[in-house]
Length: 166
Length: 166
Image (cartoon, rainbow over all chains, first blue to last red; front, side, top):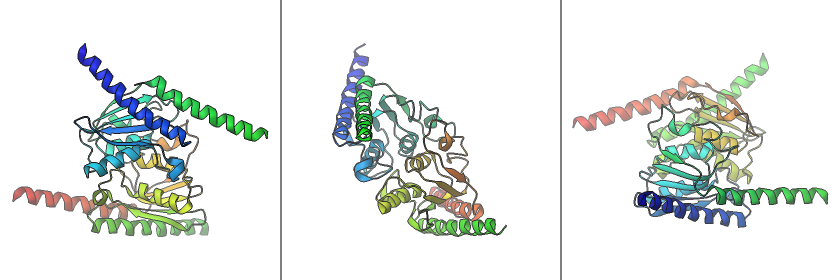
């Protein structure tokens, strides 16, 4: 179907934008995760990548930074009708923040079996007590999104090993 | 036992400090939750209250603001040996942030059956896959901590009702 094909292209395009932010993070020696937020008209209103090391902020994940920027741009903590594209499955902190921000949809790239809120069984986004729920689609450009992460952690391990053997 | 009695006084004293911050939030028409963070020597290195409405930041919970201040004060995202006292059971976002910050202990006041991470069954702080865990004690000065919250929400409802009847 043409509509599906267009949808697919939109998802790919948006995730590619988030991926480019992840690559920026990689070049800064930050865990390479990038995120963008689109308003209801599909306009990018916020973009960010991990900055935990540069800012020494434990909450410096791409998602949190993008959420805060989007809220600033809309001058409202309610990100109604907004969607997030993020290259890695969010952790519980970021899923919690997306709930507070009343996001409409979440699209993520690579699954994170160890730290991802969904993969580790914390289905916090559709808890029966919630007064807000949002849709979640994972695995968009999974290969590309996980590749940059694998390269980052492999190089970290190699640097660590070589520093130990000196 | 004298030690227990001293412990109890410390907890009470620290929660009272957090409660005074919650009362500041109440006076600003913010959801009245206050939080402080102590370093390993028991020195208060950060204090904050909810500022979600004033800043229109969906992540503007007392805990997140206190964590970010503490990290700034220590110039490190690792809040090793630090403890948080917060007047309300944290939500999943804040519990996630405490994990990322590698906090040592969490003490909270009122239980939150609807939004608290623990009360709603999200035991994210002791998930088997975590490489960091922390201790949690709830119910310290529960009555006082929940009283200010009940008053806040009761007054909100009354204002809403009276605006509807005009």
